[in-house]
Length: 377
Ligand SMILES: Nc1ncnc2c1ncn2[C@@H]1O[C@H](COP(=O)(O)OP(=O)(O)OP(=O)(O)O)[C@@H](O)[C@H]1O
Ligand SMILES: [Mg+2]
Image (cartoon, rainbow, N blue to C red):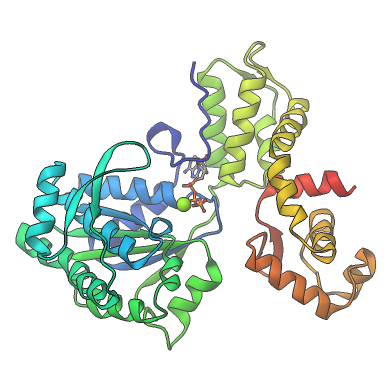
């Protein structure tokens, strides 16, 4: 029997819980060819939501295109990714997609390559001249709109981890994208990412190219009620009996983080497969096992921090990050003067170890937080 709790990969179909309202809203707006920013902290389920929305759009006769900017490690890679994903959306057969790229982007030299999973894909012969790449990119940006008119079918382009666009040539790439996208009437754009401060700066800063380009959706966690029903259903459908309140307790512990909830339930399921019964006391045991598996990862994070940064994390893990700068907090935790605290906080945010949500500093990975609590007790 397959463990029904999936984590660490995109979830779809029966592995995907709820998000009905978000799917409805996004699908409706994207069908109307709007431009939307989708922002959430890491591991909330952005990519899974995007993939599910794109599936819904495909069912509604839209060409869906997904571009993960983490894969675009250079401008050349971006060009390759962009043209390949467009080609493979309109032409599903590899040979035809390659022919298609040659036709619509004369001068580009596409060829068959083998991707990381060992499957055939499309690569573009290396172009060293930056200006030439930019010229091709400008053509690629306009391609979906041209194709939409020709094929009488709208497109939706979803860029995941969109903040990575800032790693290329400063702001000029954003400017050319905006210049092109703003004329597209038959293409929807979804810009998603987890680096809130960077993305907010892109949409809310007047001097930036994407200023007010469209609406911003801040994705929340999955509502407790829905997520509990989903997780309980998975246990029950595989013959497990649950002590009253088990799933609620598990969700409390992982603070409703979808990734950590699935990981904890996965462990609970594996651990109790023989007796098929789960008690509240099993939760701590499952967490302990996860934390010992995560120790190498947590240790390497920990070792790379200064003593003061560790002290700040210990304080947040044990006392919460609500009133970090108050006299009481500083006195109770011995983390020193406000200025040193500010420096450590800034660096921890930069390293994405903590983030500020609604004025409260939180450790982004709840397992790391539990690990710190145990280590520093
Ligand atoms: N709607 C959902 N239903 C069930 N589980 C979910 C859902 N959304 C997310 N998860 C859980 O969270 C994990 C991470 O999801 P996903 O990769 O979509 O998040 P993300 O926000 O894109 O993460 P990252 O910031 O790492 O890119 C999934 O593997 C799954 O375990
Ligand atoms: Mg993601």
